[in-house]
Length: 100
Image (cartoon, rainbow, N blue to C red):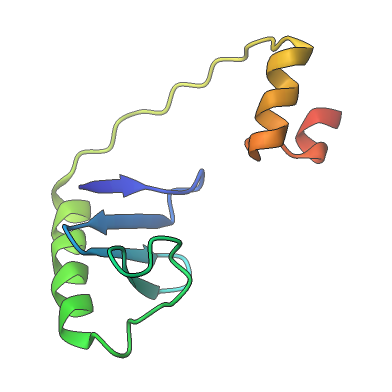
């Protein structure tokens, strides 16, 4: 499974059965997590599992190179106070975003 993780599209990830590899294209740095043993992703094992990291980085790079870019569609919506509060609690909305 592949995905983009950031609004600026600099973070990309690949997830396999046991591993999650995240690469930040802005700073050119990767992270690797054993998602079976470390489900909270607290221990970056990229330097302990170099061959796995290189393999996943290659797969991710191929995906990024061969995937066409879809245009982004922005649509402004009005949230109710209840929904806005729930999104804030979940961390999807920060205080700065609410003040805009």
